[in-house]
Length: 384
Image (cartoon, rainbow, N blue to C red; front, side, top):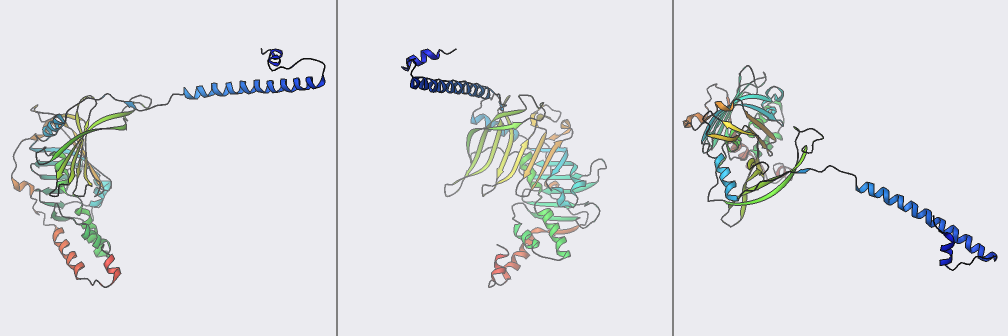
């Protein structure tokens, strides 16, 4: 308990019968009481503030990381590249309008597949309907040209075509021209070309057959961290949301002018070891062409020679707006190292389907655009 008389004495207040002194004394007592109440209120506020500071909040768990040199990372890339050829049966999962290009994404969103790949850049891919085994599509690429045969389209028959094109060709001009034309017949052609101009078997070659490192490129190592959620963990588990560390290995090509351009970026998971988890492939403009994510590792073939290889591969093509996940059905039955003839990767139109030559159509559209008069601004801007 505070001794107010002592406090008064300290401030020189005398007790007596003078009314002024009493009035002053009462005012001072009132001020002291208010100060006392204020001190109690502030104490309560500070006590409450301490409780707020002590409130626990969940933060991502920082996972322990392993270390590796740049040479070790390059060795890991080349270990993947030791696969020279492969034949496998896979489960194919199409996402983001991928098989909507074939006319019926609901029916063909999931499919069975048989894949044959061989270095340097050859691929044969057969897509079948699940359970019944009916062929939906065959496609090949010999590294330069691609061919796609659509055998089933949900019953209408108007999408069953044999499409040919060049891997490195840019068909965007062809697609823009068709998208600006009207009429039912033209719309059918537009859908056919749009369906196959973007889907190329070559998109999956570099994902399955990782290209090795070489002396023509420049490499640089760095680190990064990502906040990730592991849905396999319980919601209240401290490992549900984690901060995972990665090594980045960037590959650069040097132009004649001395400019460095990124060509590939490898992501290595550093938790529990060093694992190649992702590969990003860039085009000449520095835009991502393919974003490849490698799933859990395991053993392929029955030989025991090919350990710690991905059992699931997801390929996303941002510019074409589709993605596909490939999962080995029976990893032990995969064949690796066999040599295949070049004819395997050049599809023939044995079904006598209507043929669509994208290169020929591109030449026709280019000639038509060049022949149009340049005087009218509206015509000039239509194809810019």
